[in-house]
Image 1 (cartoon, rainbow, N blue to C red):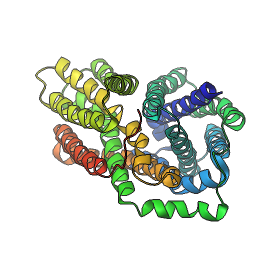
Image 2 (image 1 turned 60 degrees about the vertical axis):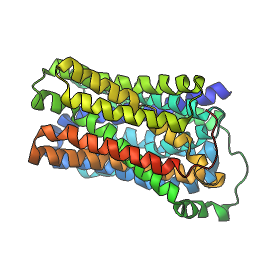
Image 3 (image 1 turned 90 degrees about the vertical axis):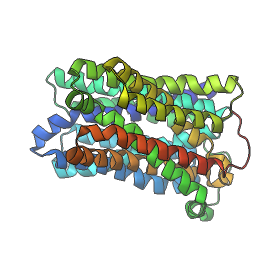
Image 4 (image 1 turned 45 degrees about the vertical axis):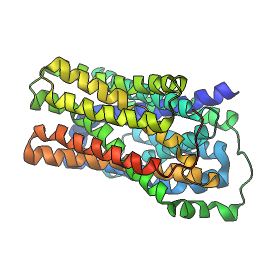
Length: 387
C-alpha cells in the first residue's frame, strides 16, 4: 500500500509536468486558431499561474477540512473535468477561464502531494524523487503535443489525452490514499493559513521559490531562442541543448539527494553546494568558448537546480509548527509558479530592449539572489531533519 501511494504521488507530478510542458508546443496552433497575438496567448500563462495562486490560498483549509484523500481527489477531478472541457474546443475567453481552472487543479495536486510526502520517513529523498518524475513528465509533454499536431489532429486533443491520464489518478487517490493522520476541528482549519503567514520564514521561503522557479522557467523557456537567435546555433543543436537542460534537472533530482545522504551531507549544505554550482554553470554558459562548453553549462545548470525545489519543501517542517505545514506548502507552491510567469516575462522585456545577450547576465543575478535567499532560510531552521 505504501508503494502504491508513493507511486500515485509520483504519477501526479508526471501529470503536472506533461500538462505544463505540452502547453508550450501548442502556442503557435492556438494563436492561429483563435487569431490572437503573442500578448493574447501570453495571457494563458498568467491565467495558469493565477489558478496556482488561488490553490495556494485554498490548499491549507482544504487539506484540514477534507483530509489528504478528498483534497487530492478533488484536485484531480478539477483537472480532469477542465481538461475534457478544453478538449471540446471552447472559445478564447472560455479557454482563459478554463486555464485558471486547470491551474487551480494542478496547484491542489502539487501542494497536496508535496504536503503528503513531506510527512513521510526519508522525505527529503522521496521529494527529490517525486520531483524527478515531474521532470520526466516535462520531457514527455512536448513529445505528446508534437505527435498530436504532427498527425494533423486538433491541438485540443492533447487535453483529451491529459484527461485520460488523470482518470486512474482520480481512482487511485480516492481508493488508496489515507484520509488524515488525525481529525482537525473545522473551526480551526481556516486559521492555519493566517498563522502560517505570520511566520517570516514562510515569506522568505516563498520568495526563495519565487526566484528559483523564475530561474528554472526563464532558462527553459528562453534557452532555445537565445541559442538560435542570440548565439547562431542551429535549431537541431539548440533543441538538443535545451533537452540536455531538462535531462540535467531530472537527473539531479534522481542522483544528488541520495548521494549526499549516503555521504552524510545534510539538506542545508547540499542546497548551498547546488546553488554555488548553478552560479558557476551559468557563468560557463555565458562565457563558454564553444557551443560544446555552452551545452555543458546548460546541462550542469539543470543538474544542480534539480534538488533545490523539493529540498526546500522538505525542510518546511523545520521552519514552523507542524499543523501549519500543509497551509505553508500550499503558499510556497503558489508563489513559485508566479515566479515562473513573472521572471520569463521580464526576461522577454529585457531581450526586447537590450538584446538576447542580456539573458544570461540576468540569470546570473537571479542565481546569486537565490543563494542569499537560502542563507536567510537556513538561519531560521529549528532542528535537523532526517534525509
